[in-house]
Amino acid sequence: MISPSTHPCPQWLSNAIFYEIYPQSFADSNGDGIGDIPGITAKLGYITDLGCNAIWLNPCFDSPFKDAGYDVRDYKKVAPRYGTNDDLAALFAAAHERGMHVILDLVPGHTSEEHEWFRHSAEVDRNEYSDRYIWTDSWISGGDGLPFIGGETPRNGTYILNFFKCQPALNYGFAHPQRAWQKPAFGPEAIATCDAMVDVMRFWLSLGADGFRVDMADSLVKQDDAGKPFTIRTWQYMFSKIRPEFPEAAFVSEWGRPNESLEAGFDMDFYLDWRWDGIPNGYNMLLRNVDNPLSRDGDKSYFNVDSGTPISDFLEQYEPQLREAEHLGGTFNFITCNHDTARVAPRLSEREIALAYCTLFAMPGVPFIYYGDEIGMRYRDLPTKEGGYVRTGSRTPMQWQSLASLNASYATPAITGGNYLPVDPSPDAPNVADSQSNKASLWYTVRRMLHLRGNCDPLQSRASFHPISRRRLFAFERSTDLERVIVAVNPSTNSERLQLPNGHYRKIFEIGETKVDFNTLTLGTQSFAILKATA
Ligand code: NOJ
Image (cartoon, rainbow, N blue to C red; front, side, top):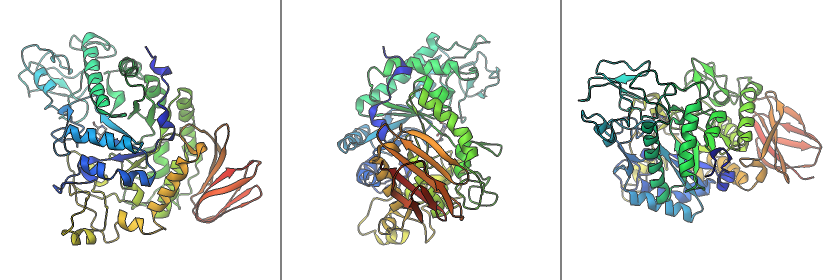
């Protein structure tokens, strides 16, 4: 048996660049208004041309869509609005033909209240599923501090929730059961849930999936201790089952604490966007250090030209976590955004975004680009849809072309992002077609940078990282045994100078005006440079 903590990360992750697709809004191939899987397959060329070689697909399973698909009704069936299981298998095959990988979104902590496991679990008579969820032993019982629902089912008990009301928690047990209804972690009931989830993984991996992004991966064992030791062991159990069968499958957790998630056996974790009670975490400090996602008032984000924020605060939080990830043999990943997070446009300017994304793409870890960020799609203030609330404004249809050309194209229908939500109606809303015909566009810069990263070993996931300037000017060295690059970004309007470590350098990428003179790099207003050490 492979021990999870010594399982080597799949090799393909070392130069993977992911594109996150929200299937509702990406590409509608049949004109029914909602994105679908054949639409995604038709756009694989676009994704590889951009420089991405992997896809994270948000939940595409049968669901009542009270939480946009994170309320799974059938783990083994593609939601009819997105197509069929055969369509998904065809997407895997087409992606593999292009050398790409596709990971799905696994939701192990809860199901929809409409899942058949839950329906059976709610029956009066005991059956195979009676302990699949966490039930108290009486209709009037509270949840021992956990959120619960009563009065909805024939069964004489209340049940524990994991997120929304529609998402009952699956039973992985309690760290320290205190009441008769609380089953132990690793007890037979918890192990049965684990085995059922491993069966779901096996189902999709056998069909051609290349791994999973795992939703709320830290939420499994209830009332776990600090550091989540019981949830960690639960994952180690599941990985001990699935890894030997699919050693090339990749697993990335929604956890946000690599010292825990990588110990649990994940290959990668995300640097999630956290801002609790107005207090930013390191990632938030870079791009979203503001209370209102649509306003620059009081914005302290590092990449905001006016913020004056030094990079040191971010590094103080980031570096210890990076070192832990390196120690545990996994990666700690940056995202441009995701389906839960406000897009940075229009709050940040196009130049600020270009500097931000290029910096993120030069950092260690596996980068994740949220669909539409490459053209600067904008966060919008929209009413909630399918449980999105404030997240809805980041889930709008992909803007493949301008609204004007879309309206004119009825005679020759093109694949659009659909109308799951209203398409951004602003006359200057960015779109792919226009971005591709403008060499000064964000899309061009992103594409140039991703292709550079893909062909430059010291910019890839596991190459080492050493900061050399921690001021407003952020500069760092990345290296392998054979090659070394210097990356520097000046987000301000001042001109900045950086003393380079000894060596000879050649500029291989720049934004704005930058100059290398012997061992000094001068960075003009809002600029970015990558230098390759040549000796
Ligand atoms: C995190 C997902 O990213 C989010 O979209 C979802 O609502 C919750 N988990 C619940 O599954």
